Length: 234
Image: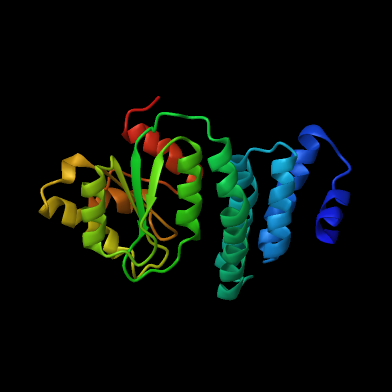
Protein backbone atom coordinates (compact mmCIF):
# COMPACT_ATOMS: atom_id res chain seq x y z
CA UNK A 1 0.00 0.00 0.00
CA UNK A 2 2.89 2.33 0.78
CA UNK A 3 4.16 2.11 -2.80
CA UNK A 4 0.74 3.00 -4.19
CA UNK A 5 0.44 5.99 -1.84
CA UNK A 6 3.93 7.09 -2.85
CA UNK A 7 2.97 6.97 -6.52
CA UNK A 8 -0.20 8.99 -5.94
CA UNK A 9 1.80 11.63 -4.05
CA UNK A 10 3.97 12.08 -7.15
CA UNK A 11 1.02 13.39 -9.18
CA UNK A 12 -0.43 16.67 -7.83
CA UNK A 13 -1.57 17.73 -11.32
CA UNK A 14 -4.78 16.90 -13.14
CA UNK A 15 -6.16 16.25 -16.61
CA UNK A 16 -3.73 16.09 -19.54
CA UNK A 17 -0.78 17.10 -17.35
CA UNK A 18 -1.51 14.25 -14.95
CA UNK A 19 -1.79 11.71 -17.76
CA UNK A 20 1.53 12.79 -19.28
CA UNK A 21 3.19 12.71 -15.88
CA UNK A 22 2.01 9.16 -15.20
CA UNK A 23 3.06 7.94 -18.64
CA UNK A 24 6.48 9.58 -18.28
CA UNK A 25 6.89 7.89 -14.89
CA UNK A 26 6.02 4.52 -16.41
CA UNK A 27 8.66 5.04 -19.10
CA UNK A 28 11.24 6.08 -16.50
CA UNK A 29 10.44 3.10 -14.27
CA UNK A 30 10.92 0.74 -17.20
CA UNK A 31 14.31 2.35 -17.79
CA UNK A 32 15.11 1.91 -14.10
CA UNK A 33 14.24 -1.80 -14.37
CA UNK A 34 11.79 -1.52 -11.46
CA UNK A 35 8.99 -4.05 -12.15
CA UNK A 36 7.12 -3.36 -8.89
CA UNK A 37 6.93 0.36 -9.58
CA UNK A 38 5.95 -0.16 -13.21
CA UNK A 39 3.06 -2.39 -12.12
CA UNK A 40 1.88 0.14 -9.53
CA UNK A 41 2.10 2.98 -12.03
CA UNK A 42 0.26 0.95 -14.66
CA UNK A 43 -2.57 0.36 -12.18
CA UNK A 44 -2.60 4.05 -11.35
CA UNK A 45 -2.78 4.89 -15.06
CA UNK A 46 -5.87 2.70 -15.49
CA UNK A 47 -7.47 4.20 -12.37
CA UNK A 48 -6.79 7.69 -13.77
CA UNK A 49 -8.70 6.84 -16.94
CA UNK A 50 -5.71 6.39 -19.23
CA UNK A 51 -6.42 3.76 -21.91
CA UNK A 52 -4.30 0.61 -21.60
CA UNK A 53 -3.17 0.95 -25.21
CA UNK A 54 -1.95 4.49 -24.47
CA UNK A 55 -0.11 3.20 -21.39
CA UNK A 56 1.64 0.63 -23.59
CA UNK A 57 2.47 3.05 -26.41
CA UNK A 58 3.43 6.20 -24.48
CA UNK A 59 4.72 4.50 -21.33
CA UNK A 60 6.04 0.95 -21.71
CA UNK A 61 7.22 1.19 -25.32
CA UNK A 62 8.71 4.64 -24.77
CA UNK A 63 10.80 3.38 -21.86
CA UNK A 64 12.03 0.36 -23.80
CA UNK A 65 12.94 2.55 -26.75
CA UNK A 66 15.06 4.79 -24.52
CA UNK A 67 16.92 1.79 -23.12
CA UNK A 68 17.47 0.50 -26.65
CA UNK A 69 18.88 3.84 -27.76
CA UNK A 70 21.24 3.92 -24.78
CA UNK A 71 22.37 0.39 -25.61
CA UNK A 72 23.11 1.38 -29.21
CA UNK A 73 25.21 4.34 -27.97
CA UNK A 74 27.13 2.07 -25.64
CA UNK A 75 25.63 3.70 -22.54
CA UNK A 76 23.74 0.59 -21.43
CA UNK A 77 24.47 -3.12 -21.18
CA UNK A 78 22.59 -6.22 -22.31
CA UNK A 79 21.54 -6.73 -18.70
CA UNK A 80 19.81 -3.34 -18.85
CA UNK A 81 17.81 -4.45 -21.89
CA UNK A 82 16.83 -7.69 -20.19
CA UNK A 83 15.90 -5.94 -16.94
CA UNK A 84 13.81 -3.30 -18.70
CA UNK A 85 12.04 -5.98 -20.73
CA UNK A 86 11.26 -7.94 -17.56
CA UNK A 87 9.78 -4.85 -15.90
CA UNK A 88 7.67 -4.14 -18.98
CA UNK A 89 6.44 -7.73 -19.12
CA UNK A 90 5.25 -7.57 -15.50
CA UNK A 91 3.03 -4.57 -16.25
CA UNK A 92 1.77 -6.07 -19.50
CA UNK A 93 0.88 -9.44 -17.98
CA UNK A 94 -0.54 -8.27 -14.65
CA UNK A 95 -2.25 -4.99 -15.56
CA UNK A 96 -2.39 -3.74 -19.13
CA UNK A 97 -3.37 -6.83 -21.11
CA UNK A 98 -6.16 -7.75 -18.63
CA UNK A 99 -7.36 -4.13 -18.80
CA UNK A 100 -7.49 -4.35 -22.58
CA UNK A 101 -9.57 -7.52 -22.40
CA UNK A 102 -11.95 -5.90 -19.94
CA UNK A 103 -12.39 -2.63 -21.83
CA UNK A 104 -12.39 -3.96 -25.37
CA UNK A 105 -15.57 -2.84 -27.09
CA UNK A 106 -15.00 -4.08 -30.63
CA UNK A 107 -17.30 -7.07 -31.13
CA UNK A 108 -16.28 -8.15 -34.61
CA UNK A 109 -12.67 -9.23 -35.05
CA UNK A 110 -10.73 -7.30 -37.68
CA UNK A 111 -8.92 -10.51 -38.55
CA UNK A 112 -6.65 -13.22 -37.17
CA UNK A 113 -2.97 -12.56 -36.66
CA UNK A 114 -0.43 -15.28 -35.89
CA UNK A 115 2.71 -13.92 -34.22
CA UNK A 116 5.95 -15.55 -33.17
CA UNK A 117 9.64 -15.00 -32.59
CA UNK A 118 11.62 -17.08 -35.07
CA UNK A 119 13.60 -20.23 -34.30
CA UNK A 120 16.79 -19.65 -32.35
CA UNK A 121 15.55 -16.40 -30.81
CA UNK A 122 13.97 -16.25 -27.34
CA UNK A 123 13.35 -12.49 -27.14
CA UNK A 124 9.70 -11.58 -26.89
CA UNK A 125 9.02 -8.18 -25.34
CA UNK A 126 8.73 -6.39 -28.69
CA UNK A 127 6.43 -9.13 -29.98
CA UNK A 128 4.37 -8.97 -26.80
CA UNK A 129 3.83 -5.23 -27.18
CA UNK A 130 2.82 -5.64 -30.82
CA UNK A 131 0.40 -8.40 -29.78
CA UNK A 132 -1.12 -6.19 -27.10
CA UNK A 133 -1.59 -3.25 -29.46
CA UNK A 134 -3.10 -5.43 -32.18
CA UNK A 135 -5.50 -6.95 -29.67
CA UNK A 136 -6.49 -3.51 -28.38
CA UNK A 137 -7.20 -2.44 -31.95
CA UNK A 138 -9.62 -5.30 -32.56
CA UNK A 139 -7.54 -8.13 -34.01
CA UNK A 140 -7.67 -11.72 -32.81
CA UNK A 141 -4.06 -12.49 -31.90
CA UNK A 142 -2.58 -15.99 -31.65
CA UNK A 143 0.86 -15.76 -30.06
CA UNK A 144 3.07 -18.76 -30.80
CA UNK A 145 5.75 -17.56 -28.36
CA UNK A 146 9.49 -17.64 -28.96
CA UNK A 147 11.90 -19.97 -30.77
CA UNK A 148 9.11 -20.88 -33.21
CA UNK A 149 10.08 -23.36 -35.89
CA UNK A 150 9.46 -22.44 -39.52
CA UNK A 151 6.94 -25.23 -39.97
CA UNK A 152 4.92 -24.06 -36.98
CA UNK A 153 4.27 -20.69 -38.61
CA UNK A 154 2.87 -22.44 -41.67
CA UNK A 155 0.90 -25.10 -39.79
CA UNK A 156 -0.77 -22.79 -37.28
CA UNK A 157 -1.64 -20.03 -39.73
CA UNK A 158 -3.15 -22.61 -42.10
CA UNK A 159 -5.08 -24.30 -39.31
CA UNK A 160 -6.46 -21.01 -38.00
CA UNK A 161 -6.91 -19.41 -41.43
CA UNK A 162 -5.03 -16.36 -40.23
CA UNK A 163 -4.99 -13.41 -42.59
CA UNK A 164 -1.69 -12.13 -41.21
CA UNK A 165 1.47 -13.88 -40.04
CA UNK A 166 4.09 -11.84 -38.19
CA UNK A 167 7.65 -13.12 -37.67
CA UNK A 168 9.88 -11.28 -35.21
CA UNK A 169 13.68 -11.48 -34.83
CA UNK A 170 15.81 -9.49 -32.42
CA UNK A 171 19.20 -10.97 -33.29
CA UNK A 172 21.08 -10.44 -36.54
CA UNK A 173 21.93 -14.15 -36.42
CA UNK A 174 18.25 -15.14 -36.46
CA UNK A 175 17.13 -12.55 -39.01
CA UNK A 176 17.67 -14.96 -41.96
CA UNK A 177 15.03 -17.26 -40.45
CA UNK A 178 12.42 -14.70 -41.51
CA UNK A 179 13.37 -15.46 -45.10
CA UNK A 180 13.05 -19.18 -44.34
CA UNK A 181 9.53 -18.61 -43.02
CA UNK A 182 8.45 -16.85 -46.21
CA UNK A 183 10.15 -19.46 -48.40
CA UNK A 184 8.23 -22.19 -46.55
CA UNK A 185 4.91 -20.51 -47.35
CA UNK A 186 5.95 -20.39 -50.99
CA UNK A 187 7.00 -24.07 -51.00
CA UNK A 188 3.69 -25.01 -49.39
CA UNK A 189 1.87 -23.18 -52.20
CA UNK A 190 -0.10 -21.01 -49.76
CA UNK A 191 1.88 -17.80 -50.06
CA UNK A 192 -1.06 -15.91 -51.54
CA UNK A 193 -3.36 -16.90 -48.68
CA UNK A 194 -1.56 -14.86 -46.01
CA UNK A 195 0.00 -11.45 -45.54
CA UNK A 196 3.50 -12.03 -44.18
CA UNK A 197 4.98 -9.26 -42.03
CA UNK A 198 8.37 -8.98 -40.33
CA UNK A 199 9.78 -6.91 -37.50
CA UNK A 200 12.51 -6.72 -34.89
CA UNK A 201 15.61 -4.65 -34.24
CA UNK A 202 17.75 -5.86 -37.18
CA UNK A 203 14.90 -5.88 -39.72
CA UNK A 204 14.38 -3.01 -42.17
CA UNK A 205 12.02 -2.02 -44.95
CA UNK A 206 14.64 -3.04 -47.51
CA UNK A 207 15.10 -6.43 -45.87
CA UNK A 208 11.35 -7.03 -45.99
CA UNK A 209 11.28 -6.28 -49.71
CA UNK A 210 14.37 -8.40 -50.40
CA UNK A 211 12.85 -11.52 -48.79
CA UNK A 212 9.40 -11.04 -50.31
CA UNK A 213 7.51 -10.02 -47.17
CA UNK A 214 4.32 -7.98 -47.44
CA UNK A 215 5.58 -5.34 -45.05
CA UNK A 216 7.78 -4.25 -42.16
CA UNK A 217 6.92 -2.26 -39.05
CA UNK A 218 9.54 -0.61 -36.82
CA UNK A 219 7.25 -0.40 -33.78
CA UNK A 220 3.90 -1.53 -32.36
CA UNK A 221 1.93 1.53 -33.49
CA UNK A 222 3.11 1.14 -37.08
CA UNK A 223 2.45 -2.60 -36.86
CA UNK A 224 -1.25 -1.92 -36.23
CA UNK A 225 -1.38 0.54 -39.14
CA UNK A 226 0.40 -1.96 -41.38
CA UNK A 227 -1.93 -4.79 -40.40
CA UNK A 228 -4.95 -2.70 -41.30
CA UNK A 229 -3.34 -1.57 -44.54
CA UNK A 230 -2.48 -5.03 -45.85
CA UNK A 231 -6.01 -6.23 -45.11
CA UNK A 232 -7.56 -3.16 -46.72
CA UNK A 233 -9.14 -1.91 -43.49
CA UNK A 234 -9.74 1.84 -43.40
